Length: 286
Image 1 (spheres, rainbow, N blue to C red):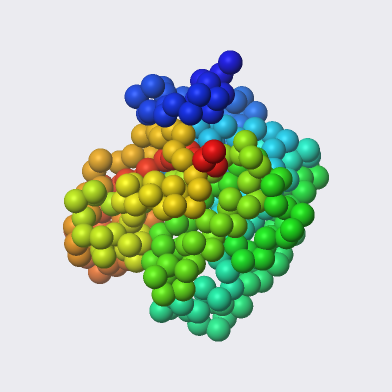
Image 2: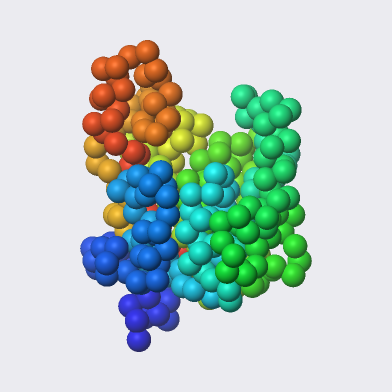
């Protein structure tokens, strides 16, 4: 019996200290091959995002049905589409369309582009691979009825902060979490990577509007939605990232939002590196 199966059968909590990190060479060779075959631009962020170790920790395997929350530019989509293979299915799940206008920077063109990205997700995947994988795009508010109870893994990689920041005014997180639970198989798992706020941070600052959430808050929101924590990993942790009350995650690479005209500031952010991230695995609670 594998360690993960043991944890799932006993309900015990598998802590990061009991889970040695896998190097890329020790992970699934097929996954490693997909990761190494990508463009140089995609591979440039591997040292910060650790895709092989992250997907291995989430126990993503070829042939699975995987729902990727907020696919964005497709960095993880390109890996998943090629790794899941012909027998696999990949869903791209975007924010509910009513959420896009909530962003202060949203323009009509931006909103239109986001809606179009959801509608053409299947064609986007075909541009990444010709392996015949099934693909479909929808939103957290438009999950097709036939998808309910069919998904092996839901991946929420840096997708929770914006859902949470609008929760109090629009219920965006609650709706999304209910959709995640509905689409997941009874034995399915939810993998989370999220910018981590210090536990000592002010709750209002750490509500997601600055990109960060407290790990305790993430665990609590999943418990509220009917999940329980199975495992956690330090694979995407960066202790150099210690944000203060005036900081946002977008000060760091690759965004550098506040250092365009300040070389010293940019150098300091480069020295920190990408954000400190929690990596968590959840299942439906019994």
